[in-house]
Amino acid sequence: MSIAIAGERSGVGKTTVTLALLAALRRRQHTVQSFKVGPDYIDPMFHSYVTGKACRNLDPILTSETYVQQCFKYHSHTADCALIEGVMGLFDGASGTNDAGSTAQVAKLLNVPVVLILNCSSTSRSIAAIAHGYRTFDPQVQVAGVILNRVGSDRHLELLTAALLPLDLPILGVLRRRDDISIPDRHLGLIPAGELTGLNDTLDRLADLGETCFDWERLLPLLTTKPVFTSPTPPWKALSLFQGDWGGIKNYATPTIRLAVAKDAAFNFYYADNLDLLRLGAELVEWSPLHDRHLPSDIQGLYFGGGYPEVFAETLAANQSARQSVKAAITAGMPTYAECGGLMYLCDRIIDFNERSYPMVGIFPTTAVMGKRLTLGYRQLTALQDTLLLNVGDRVWGHEFHRSTLTDFPPQPLCHLEGYESKLVFAPEGWSRYQVQAAYTHLHFGSRPDLPDRFLNSCRKFGKLFASQT
Image (cartoon, rainbow, N blue to C red; front, side, top):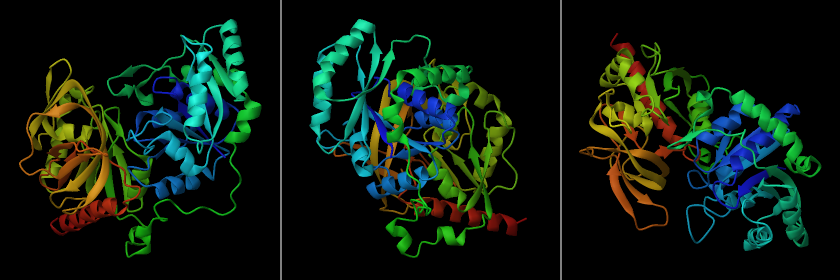
């Protein structure tokens, strides 16, 4: 069993409640597997920091309904407790007419109950109307109870409790207004866990809060997983793709290549499942474009995830030897995959929010300029040319999440973009030069393990060619 922590809308305290639950469960010596609905990278970093286990994204649009079910089953079977943090409001997703990509859809796919967080600030009896609406909007969604957040006083709680009593909807937690527990944010959301000082103290306060504010007699049975005596199949093995001739796992049981993965405060947006799939065929070698002077030795490929290169542009620019090392490897033909922040790093320059300009690697003749406008949403990519991961005509879902734009378009863009359930057609995007695939759009490899397989095959060929020339 598990629960999905859902909100009536964004900003009601889902992450605070989730971290309080996770911290309290860990203090009680439970092993906890957490999940995050949607394409988010930042909240999962906090989950993993607390639980010590990689948080898994459950996104039926980026992957598939089957993948979401298999991913949850596979990763929760080794934990005492499983917890899912939702996205936005309970029924908010990619569509205005159905629940695609929403917490509600995932809860129904997994047959798990929902605990609904209600923002009680500036309301009393009206809270019952809100709770009643969410409970009855979709009868297939099991609302197991509510957590009252931002309760102002004992009298306020009395009014809220009396209003909810006729609904026979359990109150599973009460959080008072607190000013001493906060996690700072910036332009793309919370500041990642790895950058924060004093995070352990904040988590201790959250654990204290979790111990006292939740109804554990009711919550713990919902969170506790049932023992599984046979190991479930990894989610990617359960896909129909594996019933054909794709032999990535069988062929690459012993990794034969080393893949350098940029991992530091500037580059840390990676799906855990993507890294797992790459590990099937490669040894992943983490390195820091911020601090390491050169690329790791004996590598055959490069992977740059998203992150915050604009925040650390000055340090990235100052590390000239690292930039030169990357450029030399790419111009020599090393296969390279870059998403969003990785694309920005490979441009000529980055111009930050203060209009300061910093030199980057210089693979692509364009500049990434930070702005106020947030580009956000699911995108269906149609490949316009053969790339490291895609063949012409391939269609795959991705997600954009950035506040920068490029000053120049690629002469031959990699892909055509369309929105989800929308007639909007976006400008073609994606850059390719040498053996590089770089685009703003993030991909999840979960339901398409053939994509990382193609990338690693290119890395393997490069390694053999390079070895034959030395």
